[in-house]
Each structure stands twice: as structure tokens, then as C-alpha cells.
Picture (cartoon, rainbow, N blue to C red):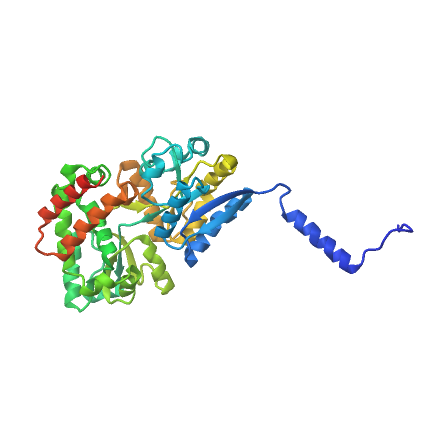
Length: 421
């Protein structure tokens, strides 16, 4: 039926109405709550990964106000400035050096209620729960993933040349292979600049201490452990490793060292699981072109670092903040994030069936290690920057000066802890 004075819609008006209905159908009728998140994920893979959390936040009706800062140091400076001015973000990425924030209850938010709701105590390994409380009794941070650090990447091409058929399980096995690699004209160990010397030392020290001894030394700063037999042995292994590293290493980026393994010019490299991306980009296949093994002497022990978000007190949008914490702890969101970033979910109940064998083993060892104590966090997550820096100086001095004995280095290591709290 057509009424006499009814205006007939024109084709243009019809198209406009259709568009309007589409917008109404896809736009929430309520205003999204804004949450400001500061992080330093700016590379292509990192941007793709953080987009997974943004999508999960949008599904909860949150408007993600993104503040991506290139470089962790720059992000930390910005965060410190914002907090000092009384203008903290809703949440900020951290992975260490945050004890000063966590110790101040007037600054950080208490996440115990949302943690109880999500049963975080049941799905997070013990060392991760400890990290998420950052030395306090309450949850103040949300861990979102785990990167395994004690990984040795090995060229299968180099293995064939020296007649090796499996990754070394002990340091003695590694040194035997390293001698053969050297004789075959292959660089036994690819090393990067100084920061990675210290990184390697921390992985070696894990193999020369029992897990409880490692925690006493690197978490508690126990003097007896810091200058004990385990630490002396760690420096002895480092002295031997030094003989298998070329002199150009001090100016080499970590990914350039990885390329040496990818191209078969080096036998092995000690590096975190993030190195896998370099192999993937190069078209290399795990098992066929390279091995992803734990550092010799590690067994299935797991040394990890974790990206987490520290939450600040922002009374204006407390509900949105709680919703954001649940987004970061969401099981599916963690899986999607880690698939893009190259890490593994921190939740022990996450479905890792879509991950590769290296990641599956990492997650299995993390879960098992959380129960039997063989999973430990990198010292950077618990120690002050001053103490970490002092330990690094001791390691580098030893690495570059053959006149320093392992016993002297261990004593210096303990003294550095006492002088830097």
C-alpha cells in the first residue's frame, strides 16, 4: 500500500539507510570503556601478537588506547615519568625492575579479587605466581606468556659433518663435539655482544646448581651459594666456552649469531626461544635443518622470562581495569598471542596443540617444573637493576681476562651482591 503523501525513497536514500543500519548493528549501544596500555612491542611479529589482545579486549567492550614505545628502556623511562607525575596508565608492560612500584601500595592496583575469580592460583606455576606478586602478598601484575631461555640451537648440517646424531646432554659431550667442529673448520659456538655473554652465564649457572641452590643464589643473594662450588663450576664452564668463541663476537647482534647457525657456519648458539623466528624466516625446519634442545646439563629444567602487565591504581575505571586483567589472563587470547609472538602461554591449562614441537616441550617442562621445582625464573625478574648490572660486570671481566680464576670470580660475584641490594 502507498499513502498519498508518502515520500518514495530514492536509490541514494536507500543506500544511506542500509549503511546506517549496518553501523548500528555493529556498534555497541553503550560507550566502550577506555583502557590505556603502555608496551614496547613494535616489531612486525610483536605488533601482530599484541593485536590479539586488542581483539579480545574489544570483544569485552573495552577501547584499547595503545601507547607502543620503541625499546624497553624508553618505555621504562616514560612509565617512570608518568607515575612520578601521578598520571599512570591503566596497565604497563614489565619484565623486571619493578620492585619499586610493587612495594608501594599507593601506586599499584590489588588484583586479588580478579585473580580469585579467575582461579589464577590453580593455573599459574609457582614461580610465575611469585613473579606476579613481585615480592608482595597480593597479585599486582598479570603474566601473559613465557619465553624459555635455556635453549641451545644446533645446526644439523654441522652435526652431520662431525658425525653427531643427537644434541649434547652434558657439557663434556658439548666440548667433545666442539673440538670436532673446530677441527672441521666450523665455529663451535656462535656468540653475540656482551649482553649475551652474561645471558649465557645465567643458563650455564642453572646447569651447575640444583634448582633450590639456584634460587638461593639468584633470588635471595645467598652468600654461600654465590661463591660456592656451583658458581665456581659455572665460571669454569664459561672459561672453556670462551675458547670456542671467535673474537668478533663482541660486536655481533644476537640474530647475526643465529644466522651463523642457520647457514651452517657455526655449530651451536645459546639463545632464548625467540631465536626460532630467525629460523622460520629463513625457511628452516626444526628437526631437519636445526635442533632446538635444552642447554647441556639442563635436563628438562626450565629457565624462563615472562612478559607481564603491571596494573596501577586508576579509580575512574576500576571495572574496565578488572576486565583488562581478565583479557590478559584469557586462555584463548594467550594462545593466539603466543602463536604470533613465538612464546608459549603462561597458563598451565592452555591448549598448545597448534604449537610446534619445541614450544610444546617448553610448555610441558614449564608445567612439570612448576610442580617439582625445576622451573626457575631468570634473575632479572626478581633482582634490582644495580645488582644485575654488578653481576654482569663480574662475568664480563672474567670473560675478557684470563688471569682471573673461577674461584676469584665467584668471590667477586658474591661481593657484588652484597654491595648492590
